[in-house]
Length: 97
Image (cartoon, rainbow, N blue to C red; front, top):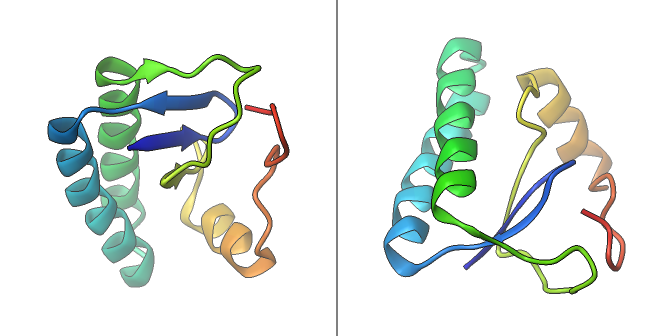
């Protein structure tokens, strides 16, 4: 699995880390749906830590399609909702982290 953290770049995760990240992603989705900022912040922090600690960074000059995109590590629910509504991912061009 390739996971992108907006503003940081992409990381390759093994199957175990990918499964853990998928579970955390469900927590993120639920927190956004519920408007639960503390749960969102906790799930986002855990997700970003997992990717940073378990993932192998993909070089910036290598383009691979991300399977999962995490928002900026300090994003709020309002910012994530805006990103989803816009349908645009900042920095989502070939070779951009």
